[in-house]
Length: 403
Image (cartoon, rainbow, N blue to C red; front, side, top):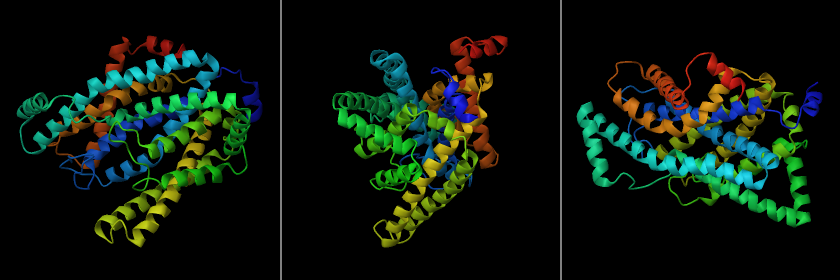
């Protein structure tokens, strides 16, 4: 039944489940960046402020989401990029990627970096006991003195930066593969083994583990400057290539319907295990025998193995489940899919500013955390509606149906 459906569908079918997965990966940005504020661990260089009321679930959310979120996103990015290149050609592909990725990265960074910087400075002032009005004035003064774009970093937009580099690399590699037939045949064999072969899962896990062993800490490193990190490019480039190969062998998407719930449940179980292992590693390294100890080294490699398995069980299970339960258009989900890119681009200043603004709120930390996640998302959806001139009425449903 599934195989027949996949073969009979027209070449321009819409993958509603994969669209939703891509949006899910973007929307998790709000979750992880709000959760960072409520962690029970001390402030650090990544997030130098903490809430008065902490949540025992915040750190678990941060670690767990970090394991699978960006790999999932890069697989989806590779799939849809390959689809666009095949349907529109190289010239339109380049133009679209520059418009959809390059322009938001450049323009967005110049707007968002000062806002993020202002929000962190405000949070530091207000966290030190300064009232809201003086904290805002102090943050504005500091920003003006230091310079709005000083100490530049790509902030959360690093993934757009890396996508642009990887797209250029894939296009160059495609030219090379087409000009050298043996390379093309080798690519086809490798892609087929990774996507449709019976050893697909072990191959993907092994390759991912090998790439993870180049990282400084368990999991994947997060870029903090504009100098591309080769190990991070290779890691996420691998996921992008797998997504690309999935488009070339897209019949495998239908095959993933089978046993999809089992894969996803195993992935969630492995996610719990990798989260526990990461916590154990950091406790051992920071409070125990140190990073160079035998115990920490063994934990590092064990954690990376479990993370590699987790990532692919979650991705393959997620693809199968999403495509299995979302076989047709759904207006609400379609709307969230369309809004998700805007939400991801614009969310970080609010994820810093709002929790700091409400730091004196007398409410349980876990409840605060989830309320703020919802509040940030709702505010950004309202702005999204305003930007598009959308009024919550039948026009919304009509427009999403025609999207």
